[in-house]
Image (cartoon, rainbow, N blue to C red; front, side, top):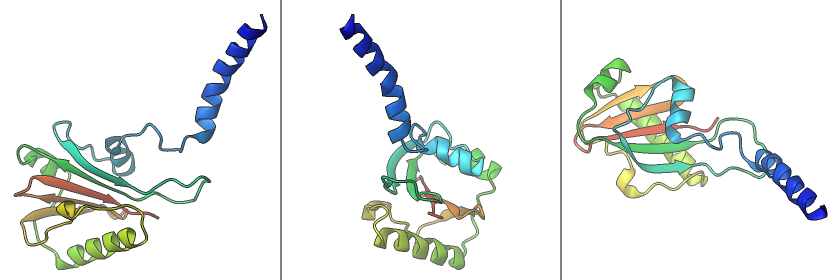
Length: 152
């Protein structure tokens, strides 16, 4: 009888422990977080090839955590780019802002970014600054969509 009660108590304690130790974004995928923060849904046919996420602290810290996610497409997602008003007009100030912000996040160790996935501004690209310090850049030739959620 005592053993049965201990097992029941343990089973009841596990969900509480998971709730207390899990971070607020636990269970949300990169796609869900992007959609939740921007209202933009990354197409299902895009394969996530990289996800660098700011590490969670043991204790709650106010603000949004940084995340850098790259999706690869088999073909240009024309409809996605058009619907979300991702522009193909090069803009040097966007490149500078994106690069400086990305480098500052990397320098303080929020996440590591393999050189392979660093933006190549020499290639043709399309971009969107959401105004929320969340940036979308689609590199046409590589067919990569880089989404950078900055820390706040």
